[in-house]
Length: 414
Image (cartoon, rainbow, N blue to C red):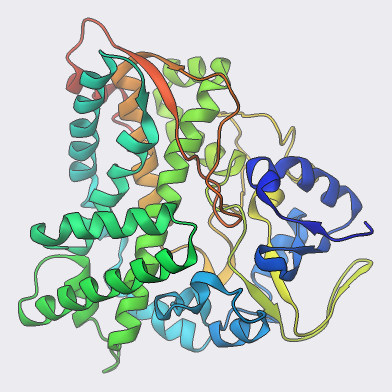
């Protein structure tokens, strides 16, 4: 394609146009990322799925850092980023086994009543604010709900939850690298203090379980604990913020689909899968690098190259999905890659799905009429990795004639 494409702010606001061009031209292309870093971008579904599970692509954090030009690695250079997500087997196998022992499906399922309660509390405040005008559903709903859930899941003490909330929010919205590093250091110090408290007095929460978990005498080190908690924050928080915000926007821009979902609330789990495909919360999978030459049809990725896999691009590949650019909440064959594939499949996927379904179901049950307050194109946060709205301003009319909390039972099957 001649001069290398730069994944700049125009790409952040509309990646779909570029993805269509790249998919048509080949399965992978070298592009320029942040700081002018050259990286291979994979955009077709078949190749993306295959490479997500290909051992020739390494996720070793130290190895990837060595390939970034000085000063361009951003958050990857933080010790908190050295998570199991950025390791290869056998280290990854060991860490995931330990985390899975604590982060079980039962632990997530037990959160349902609390997630519903938090959603209802937030919707009470939104209803009051909506009576006086516009409401930003990112600031008032999509952002605070997952923060509160992950804080309770981890067992962050009440006295530390405000500092925890501020730190996590700043990591999500901050683009200045100095501020980002300072925030991550502050959050690491807070979590270190909380970990010490859990060692002294364990409780019934995920963090206490992680502190105590062991397999064959193995335990997570202090640094592994910090990195794992950071990963769970991202896995259980940032993707969920984007799932909720992107899902709401998708419905508001597709009123036929919104009416269909209101008419058949039991379809919400399938609708959530379609939201994950249609506007994937994670645009690009985290960085990998090739340890050997990789052939993709006519394209060769040499050894020692940085590689990113376009999850959003793959999820719009017409070779895998019929009418990929159309939202279809009734789509039955939907093997999207929003949570990845292979050994690095997102450990927080069940929690994100549960929170997304509850949040969207509660919102639709609570308000009969939800309309975009601003008809200008939506603005996305300046991130090539994540696909998330910076704001979503709406006007809402509450459902009439039925108590708000009772209405939520209409979506009780999710």
